[in-house]
Amino acid sequence: MATHYAQRASAGLIIAEGTTPNAVGQTYPHIPGIHSPAQIAGWRRVTEAVRAAGGRMFLQLQHGGRVGHPDTSGRVPLAPSAARFPEPLHTPGGPRDAVTPRAMTDEDIRSTLADFAAAAVHAVEAGFEGVEVHSANGHLLHQFLSQNTNRRTDAWGGSVEGRIRFTVEVVRAVAEAIGPERVGVRISPGLNVNGIEEGDTEDIYPALLQALAELEPVYLHLVHAAPDRPAFTEIRTAWPGTLIANPVLSREEVAADGGRQRGEALLAAGADLVALGRGFIANPDFVERLRTGAPLGELRPEFLMHVHGAEGYTDYPTLEEANGRPVRGAARAAAGRRGGRRPAAA
Image (cartoon, rainbow, N blue to C red; front, side, top):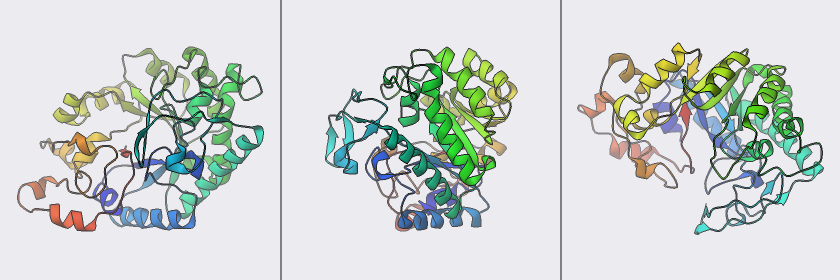
């Protein structure tokens, strides 16, 4: 992982892969955490390698909620309500039917808030510039936002104000722990991934953005942004701070220009930064290739999830290497174990 991220240190900001603040938040096998001394030490090796290469990193804090399995974490998953994930989940033994999560008690919620705050402190100790709170893609915070996964009738559910409360309190706890200038937030309005059905997207996000703006996080990261979608325009208008936009990209667009055209359209429409992931996976020198108009390396999608080792991870060559110097053997020797999801970079 240190090799992989250091190879991509030319990014303006690397947002590292989803990392769990506690053991029960684990989604898939081998994804990283930031809740033990060994994990802090391991991440410090990564940030030191990136900093030595001139880069900077934020760590994405992601709790899976119901997107977890006892065969993976050793624990029954926690979620806003006892609403089971609708599909099989990847576990160390292969695909397994999801189990019904345990609805979080008020004590569970308070403990999880403390875990997020502690994880943020650990991330800074590990050398990260800050953290990105993951409130998107059907994971725990998004589950609190959504009607089909949050069936609570207490102060953490029901109304829009109740359903946005957990995300707001996580961001508040993290900002109080390390400072709002070190905290970003990721959202995915209307994205029906991981079985999510928000139900009232048009009501949730104006209220959420207003509450988050009062906490003054350093940026908001919008997933699957497109300048011709009303959600982007409305969020850009409503959000007073820095907006990172992650464009919707087809496989063909990734192969053609890595998302450059879509990214430039988002910048022209008001985004402050653009987050691109797949282009960086296949091209360690992605920034330089965009700058010079050089052709992009081909992404090998079979290595994107649930595989380990250097192949498809650290053996993608730079343009210079592709034109002369082989790197596969050296990269394979230097690579370590990695988790189930890929990082994004801005």
